[in-house]
Amino acid sequence: MRKNMKEFKIYLRKKYRSIRENMDLKIKKIWDSKILKKVTILSRYKNCNTILTYISKDIEVDTLEIINKAWEDGKKVAVPACDKETMKMNFYEINSMDDLEKGTFGLLEPKKDICKKIEETQGTLCFVPGFSFDQEGFRLGYGYGYYDRFLQNFKGTKIGICYNNCITNKLPHGRYDCSVDILITNAFIKEIHSS
Image 1: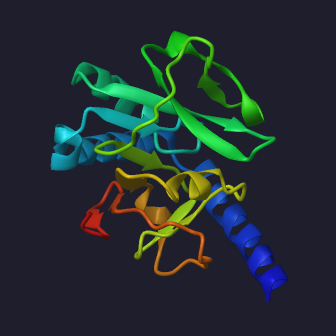
Image 2: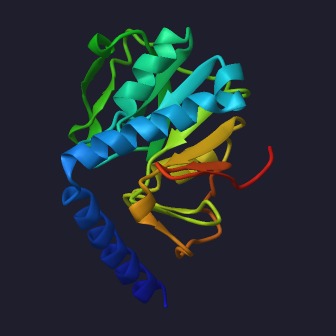
């Protein structure tokens, strides 16, 4: 059963990666803009002081616009650094894109020697990546488990951002998987939990 589940998740990742890779770039830009607008109308966004967000890759919802908007709105921005040895992820505050360097998996990560680690997550927003999300807020991630481990002790609001064509009714998930509190796509905002 576990082997079948693993194979099914591999199949789903290929499926949603293909959808992302074949998206028309003009449509992607429009959808990114719609998602940004929906993020910024949230009262939880307006009331938070700090956002935690990944640095987006080409096939992901554009978080660079979210980061710039957060700075414009006077918020602190923190991005993740992954540790392959401990399999843990921590967030560090950045003040500009110059605070980033290539890190784990070739992703842009904060320069840990100059960036301050975020210790307290109460009242923060965490933007969670995923190939796909389901209607219950569970996600299909990249399969490394960094976010699921981090979110176990996260005290703020978890926000899944995803394109509407990558939302499905139900995804397979285990007991350690965390659902998000709010799901935002280019088409809707859905409150999953009231926290």
